[in-house]
Length: 182
Image (cartoon, rainbow, N blue to C red; front, top):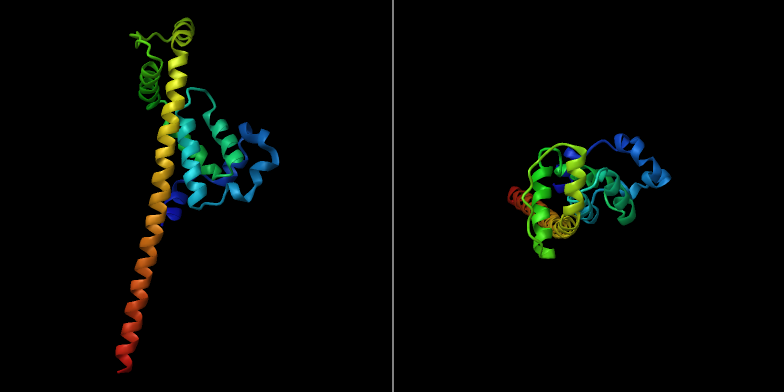
């Protein structure tokens, strides 16, 4: 059940293999284990993808793909989960991680007035990069680990539920055959 559910939403492997930004991975991207979907590879891919989604850097998908190769987890799932932080959710995610970083570094939260200029971005980023990066790493690790354990638990629960349902169907079939013979 979890495998079918996850595979339904995964990107096509050929699309990912043909991505020009991932060409630096070379032959490693063709490793069959990167495309296999089981409980371990899915849970680790959730950790990698969600961790990378919280990183305040460009090209998060490249980082997720590299980590998927290193940790030998499902590459398409890792890359797809990075899109949790998209242009719509990014401001909220990074403001939250900035606040977490300010709490961790015991620094006051700056009151930001937004201007979309290169000078403003450079000035503000030089002032907030430490709490933003620290909060992003801590939050990404915690949320990624939480999702890792949730996926492992859900996968195990789903497989156990399928096994119990199959045993019940077999028991009913045996009882039906026995009653027909009488």
